[in-house]
Length: 256
Image 1 (cartoon, helix red, strand yellow):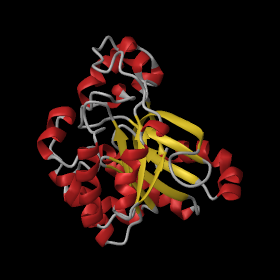
Image 2 (spheres, rainbow, N blue to C red):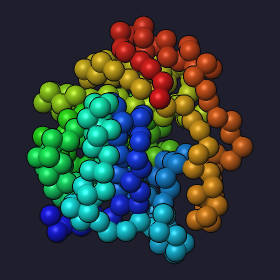
Image 3 (cartoon, rainbow, N blue to C red):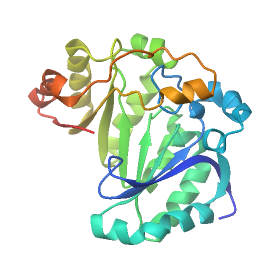
Image 4 (tube, rainbow, N blue to C red):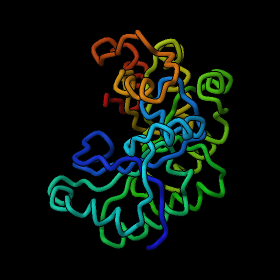
C-alpha cells in the first residue's frame, strides 16, 4: 500500500473509457512515440521536457495506492449507479506494472470494476502477470502492418498482437480501440487489414477513435514539434465506410 506510482492525472466522470461513469488514472511513461499522441508528456522520449516544464499537470507526481483509491472512492456512488469503476490509462500502464497490479488488487478487493487501456507493448511475462487482475482490457490497435506501425510509433507490433491473442485465449474481455489517424491508418485498405486481423485473433468488439487536436497545446508547452499541425479532425459521419469494413467482418463497431 506504500508503493508509489507516477501519475499525471486522475480524470473524473469519464464516460468513454469503459462502461458507466469512471475515474481514469493516467500513468506516466510510454515506450511508444506516436506522432499524434494527445498525451506527449507521458512518452519516455519526452519525459525530460515534461519535467523541465515545471507544470505538475505535465510532470505528474508520486501517488501511493491508498492515495489513489481515496481519491477515486469519492465517486463510488456514481460507479454503483452507472455500472462504472476505474480505468488505468496513460501513457502505458504496463510501464509501471508492479504499482498497477498492487492498485488493481486493492481496488478489486473493494469491489471496484477495473479496466485498463493499454498499447499491449510489454514482455509476455509482465503482461501475463497483469491480466488476471483486470475486468476489461481496452486494447489499442494502431495498424496491422508491422513496418508501418514501426515507422509511426517507434515499435513493431509483434508483441502487441501476441499479447492481445493471449488475453483473449485467457478469457479476458477485450475491446480493440483504433485511433483513426489521417495519413496513417485512415484508409479503407488499412481498415480491411485491421478488421481481418482482429477477427482472426478473436476480437468481437471494436471502438473507433477519430483523430482530434485535443493535445496540440501540450506540444507548445513542451516546446516540441507537432507533426499533425493543421490536420483536420475526423468525425464519425465521415467514417461510415470505414466503420462498415468492420461491420462487414461481423465485428461490433462503434465510435468513441
